Length: 176
Image (cartoon, rainbow, N blue to C red; front, side, top):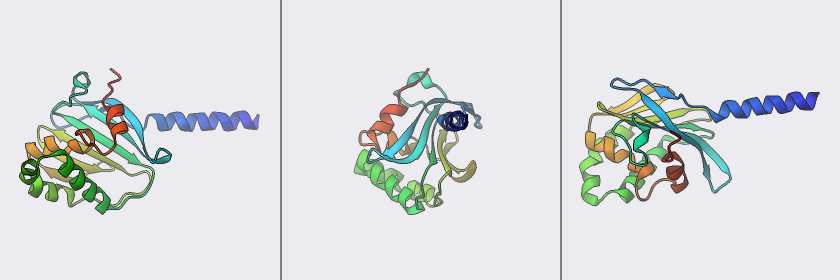
């Protein structure tokens, strides 16, 4: 009986973790709907985070709609500097020198407020008609009205040389 209760509790916990993201998020302009979610691993066995892609129109995948959000719930600690360095490195890889120079000032300003994360923290990066927004645990910590930055920033995850090719592939598969 105890084994059955334990198995039931573990199953409930894993099912609860399987849906850590909302199915719909309200924004100032229009709602975003969850298109996909996946786990993020490093070196194939280190559980790093869960990720979700939300869009105003999931039917456009693998092409991203103008209004889109990528969300991460972290399973380990990361320093703010790690996010900033990764964003800069990945954007330099995915943009021409001229494209990077065009967004560099806005990028530095947008990335500056990144904060350290601990297990359970969540980051949402949202592109809407109002520009690019960064939320930590639901609180707005950075925003930029540059439409160019807003479009280019998602190349971190969806460019030709993304952060993680498996993550890109998993998120761009629409469940709808």
